[in-house]
Image (tube, rainbow, N blue to C red; front, top):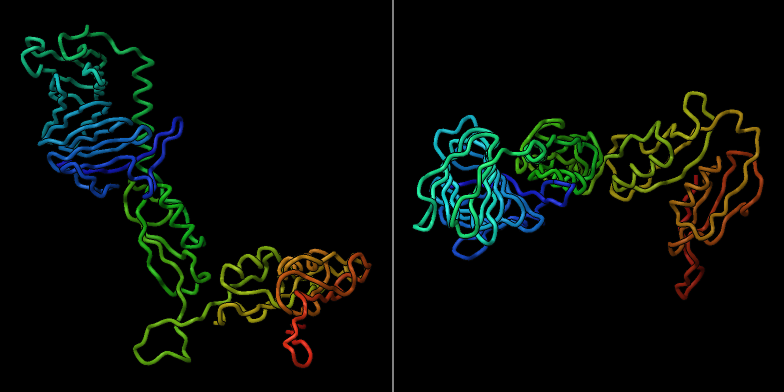
Length: 420
């Protein structure tokens, strides 16, 4: 029995963990049929493993780690692996108690070695490179070499097509040995990634980031009021932990708190409420992103003279932070400006064809205040007061209309005005 510890994607020079959509880079076949793969998959006796041209697998079997390189086909036996074609790198782990035999159509490798590489080509020729320890090779079938041969660390050898005879034993060139060790080290680094910090990210983005590092993700909904609804407020294990590809990481995502007006005794169901995030001290652009991430909209935005807040940052918000509101509610902001700005003039920006959010941002960026916003049918700004290009006192109010009037057939067209 073997265990598939990890699936990797090898597009040289890049080597990375496979995402769940890429687990097919290493397919486990049982009775000729593909079984569910991915990290932690058990591979039984008689099962085959096939890696794609850009796929790799890392197995654990009989206390040995086996790196299965791209383009390899093998069959798992009882304390043995039959390599049909391809390349495997075998490393004996300190806790190993038994032995692992690597066999081919032609020969069997009795592993006394700590680390060695076996390459089997389509014509059934083979090459064995021993980095550490000792490997004894025995012929399978009557056509092979007459007696076992041993290779020790720093040697390599093998046999020609169909195993008619052995190739000469020779020292492993230094650059070749170093290249193999770098490859083994790269696999070890990818297989033992550090858990990234995903706190504050939307749960979907956090899942993508963790899966990119090769982790399995479990989501746990919590109410902590530490962040906007739908964002990650905690992980287990914590960020910075060194894990293995395929390990499970639990992310705690902020959920909607209960609605006291609709809850009953013993009812922990949450209803449509969100917590207003604290954006005081943020720039207007950052505040807008945070509010949008919490499912809220910008309300009135005015600039005010402040000596205790940085120019261009939010000095006041309404509703206040941590208040429960309905999704889609508007949050009014005051943006600080320096006292000197009150004595200077500012140019009114052109808001036509901007949507409401961008128009508000343009007004604030021009060191002016949003006075009144008239929402008609939605869409882009169709009118503004004062007109674009006018010079006004900094901090003055700018009003604008979003959309065009629609008549219902009776009376005057209706509109919604949002004013300070």
